[in-house]
Image (cartoon, rainbow, N blue to C red):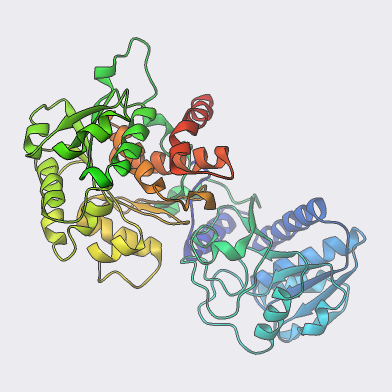
Length: 486
């Protein structure tokens, strides 16, 4: 149990049910949820008139608790309900009965004069677009220009997939319970959630043993135990030798970015393997990173100490790049297949997948993913990445502001720490280099991909505005110090 587990809506329903079966009444969980939300709101916002928008389900029940507790603390509260109060059921009906203020019909007029809006309309189990008066109110909420706190996920968002089903609230803050859901990290819903708080409401962590979560938010707790921190008495030859394949002269910068990242993350030796015309350019700009010329990539692989290979960044699309990737995989090396190497297998993905037998990480962005997996265009990014990993027999790191990493066995993480400054030329080459550097040190492929993505994002965040790709490796030592400090 790491605290990083991500639960689908169905898994969260089960967590609630298991907590109730262990003796915590549902009404207590709802009271705890509303109390936690009210506390966060009171601690983080000025005391202004607040509009609490409630739906007819348990999400609305949380809203009734929030309204009651804020009013008790002296807030001016207006509560609007979607539907007939007499038709509320179960715990939501119990909480509505404890609310002593008026229950107004849901309408745009509720927002007049409000300095804060609480969205408790529709929970994460939404399965169809919101319409009617609720849709009108959502549009008005988004145009109100005041802070919006969403209970669990913003209304209009499907919690398990991150899909936005029609009109949806754009929240400045979302407050969820026990564990986050994929929607808090996946695009496009991620951009609607704002800051996300995950609060304890009394669900015991042991229920996760029965639920058996297979998806996590990326973080060191998942992989620190196998991270290759330098050991006392260690030697560079014990930390692996990464090969970064370079393309022709004009494309060599990408390989240098990857190679420097591999060295920074701890690979004992790193060599840029290049065609003859690129040697001088590389040799003039590299110091600790070595160079080696090849006309047949098999010659580079003849030295079995060269145990990890990155193919793709700036390699050019075509037969030569395919040849290098296939030879590295057939030789049993740990491999990262990136960029041009992925595109080089467009229409021939089976040729690539057929030779993957050892540790291998594929690192596509959207366009490259479509070239390797053209039939996996529908569904959530999480589902698509899992399906791709199972088909390829490799770890798939599907890049983006919501990078998803999946293993063939179904394990998956969503990386949530990447700042928008990473959208810059060459940052993907650095990421690929980080992963191959970790593979060279014998870190397992799934964990290496997770660690590489997290370090990539953390280094970029530490650097801040003005980031270019070269800065990521230079800031990496600060991220590694944080990681080592625990």
